[in-house]
Picture (cartoon, rainbow, N blue to C red):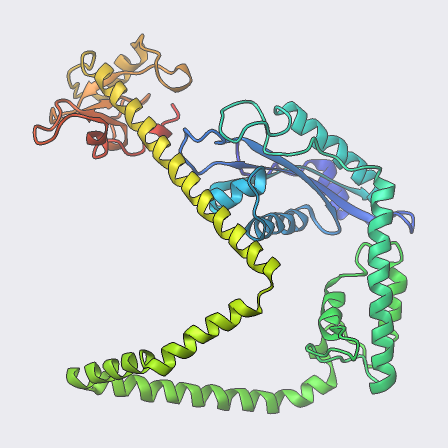
Amino acid sequence: MSDVPPKKDAFAILMSNATPVCPPDDPWYTAVLYEAWLEHVDLEEPLWRVSYFGQVVRVGTAEEVFAKRKRQHETDAAREDKDLGFHAVIDRFGPDAIAWRIASFKSGPRSEMQAWANAEEIRLIDEHGGVLQDMDAKRKQTLNLVKGGKRDAAKVWAGIDAWRNLALTKFKAAMDAYVEEHGSALVPVRYVDDDGYKLGGQLHSFRMGRMRKGMPNEADITAWAEALPEWHWDARQSEEYKVDRPAKTKTTMATDASKAKRRKISTDQWKNASEATRAEWSKTMSDAQNRPEVRAASVQRGKDQAANRTAEQEADRLAKLRKTMATDASKAKRRKITTEQLARERRAELERARPIAVPFEKSNKRRKELRAASTDFSGKRGNAVLYMVSEDGATIRRVLKDGTMQKRTIVGPVVDPPTSEAGPSDLNAYVSESESESD
């Protein structure tokens, strides 16, 4: 399994350079099928290299669409509190433990791309073992909680377009009202109208593509926007911005210079002060924070926050706290079980290797030949294994295919250290990355 995306075929390259021609009610979209799996963890983890398959159908290149969907998964996993499935795995092991790749992609009319993505997602999940069945057992399965696919593509996109049109109608009404009052479409980014609608933020999102990109009537929406007085896709190109910019720049520079000066004075004062003076300052700051009235105010703020929480909010907070504590305890228990299991396996391998380890052979070529001739096929995936005593006679190591004996292939000591009772924990000093050996 590789996290390197597949190369584009000739058809994909041709289509990326072509001018999309679609019916007005079926715009041009890109469909991406992607795979993600738990890669950077202990190999004994039950979910190691169990895959998740997903689809995304949006406007943009395959790489852009895939990157946005990946970020969305990571954000949702951090925000949600899942016990099962792909987001639970991201939350438990962290985003860095996940490997990703684009499995396939196509561009074309939106309805056709959605139908193709549905079929491919269902096929991939089924071929790799079906939906998730057990988070704690090694078995052929995926991290998907459902079999994949969406309902009828036309109905799906009709619903999405309906919601986007609703948002667009509200945005257009607010923009028209602002233009009628101010005579300009240059809305300050923090502007909120009398109804509480955040028009400035919505305008920024609209410029970035929300409520228009990929819509069947995108051309009409774009024409409406560009007909507004003082319209700019980038507000920095407006005359108003260009006129105000020098004054704003001067103010910002003056503010930054003032802050820097205050920081320098404070830093220089601390740097030039004697140890006794520094100690006195530190004590003063500590005393100030520990003054009864300061501590009382801090306690009161906590009480006020608790009092302002409703009974339902408080119950929800306590439930989340208990769940977090239970999850942490479960993770710690799993880590302990995994560690102990690995230690037992390492000890068992050492006991088996000691009586069959061959003396050290200086020739790398000879070691390679001995490894190739070994009849011990107890390695991972049935690979041949040859145990050999190291040159210094202190440890037993596995010999790799190329005849090398590296530090990461140490199995354990030839003789248990005399200062401690032999046991699984004594192997920690000898075992490093040997579990990742792939030969």
